[in-house]
Length: 297
Ligand SMILES: Nc1ncnc2c1ncn2[C@@H]1O[C@H](COP(=O)(O)OP(=O)(O)O)[C@@H](O)[C@H]1O
Ligand SMILES: [Mg+2]
Image 1 (cartoon, protein in one colour):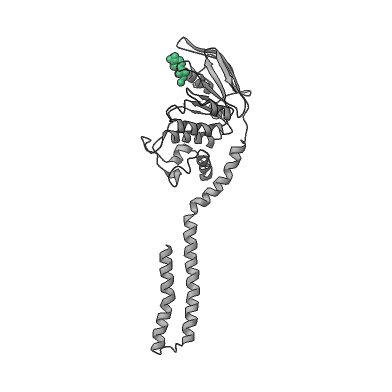
Image 2: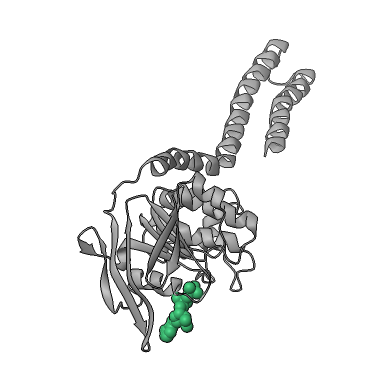
């Protein structure tokens, strides 16, 4: 664009001088040297202005994404600092589950205050997934209750993420909105929050997620799931082994992201990094058939 502008400038500047010189030489239209000078000065003035317009237009076009981005950046800060509507504490009381006449666990109690995070661990098969599903209401408890303050917990209150994130072959935009109405600014904001905005190609919202997810890594898929929850301003995240198929580096990255968000969280995990939990004040509890044993703060 700029090369064309330069050529255009040179041509329109030199053109009139060239024509005037021919006219002067042939004594046509009474052309004098002073007219040539005046003409060339006027031409130069007009051409410089035209060339400036093309330069400004180039700058405007090339920074369109950046300018959109700057607005997004400014709006991210409040989300990191403080959540808008704080939910009451999550209170699990005397929760018991029996499946096909088999008692999985009994009388489990847990209280999770706003912004508090807990990691529940233990070997597989003890009932951790069943416990998380019972909290979410996916499995009906045999007895006990799960409340947010005084009200029963409903699916509108939490985001449930498991090892396999459900994605469909469509734009990232539709995978985030699930065809609900959100502005580009809201979408950009959550993508930035989970670190996908910089990581994915230009115009990430229009990127098509392939059927087999081959253009998205496991860690990115998890971050899309987290972004869905943030977009809906969910303040309780229920996470079942979300890092179990990721390498250490990606697991740490996902955990640092989740642990630093102003949300309440219950994470089920087989492996964990105690130093990281300590750093982010995440409680550790061992799952037992008859209760949670909180190990550390
Ligand atoms: N729908 C079900 N019906 C019967 N038993 C189940 C069902 N779901 C899980 N279980 C049993 O509950 C126990 C705990 O399973 P799960 O909650 O998946 O454990 P964890 O997540 O700790 O590995 C297992 O013995 C499993 O076989
Ligand atoms: Mg499990």
